[in-house]
Image 1 (cartoon, rainbow, N blue to C red):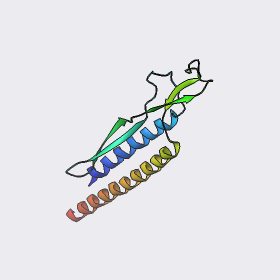
Image 2: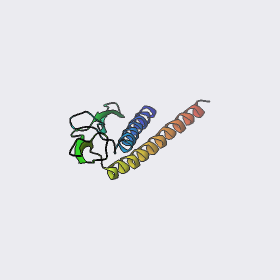
Image 3: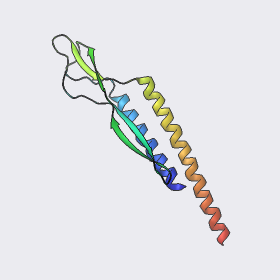
Image 4: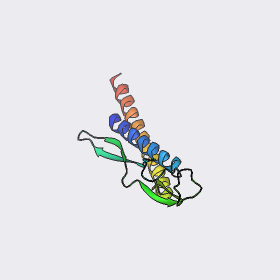
Length: 123
């Protein structure tokens, strides 16, 4: 049970880190055609023995063309590209990751308590 909880903690941490990175880089701009910041997501896959494996992935399409003549990356028409990031979705992702982390910690504590009870029975 502890391994399942630890995999949940790792997945929640990865999701929180990806969402935080997206939030921090939401206003980055780059010249049209150049590779700027690419938003990140997390794919979770169930493990047959229990738990989850999480992997960070680059989201596609990751950029949009914006009009920002004040950007140093803007062309003569004032166009640049920016990552396509929804701040409300990222806030929701951070809350969900925090909840997942908290629940996984509760499972880890329950596994620890179970182990302590088992050791107490042996003595």
